[in-house]
Amino acid sequence: MDFKVFSNNQLVIPTESGLDILRCKDILRCDAEKSFCRFFMVDGSEILVKKSLTFFEPKLAEWNFLRVHKSTMINLMHVKRYLKGARSRVVLTDQSEIFIADRKKSDILQSLRLIV
Image (cartoon, rainbow, N blue to C red):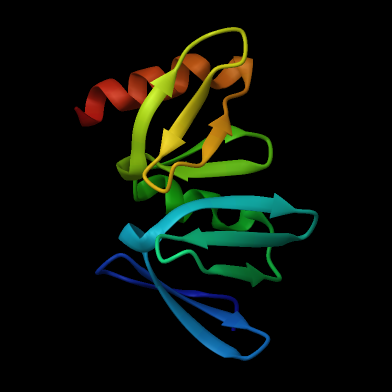
């Protein structure tokens, strides 16, 4: 089983210890780590899945996630602040700062305007 999507914005994904059910609203961000994807959760936990970020990207994009860097997707509902500058970044609700690739700056600004 790769992963299963429920209509109520949940992913069921296989992990080393069994199956995890992730609620979209509980995911802060996802980072690519070679052929793995690490999910960072609002409770501070991390879940490593043996699938690439590219594998999850289409479904996460439907749930207000945006790829802001070649190795990172963020949940736009957890963006607390956008910091502009030579190295633009966003601050998430857990206070983590995520750098935005130059080519993605206009995408995130447009997406944040649509949410507000």
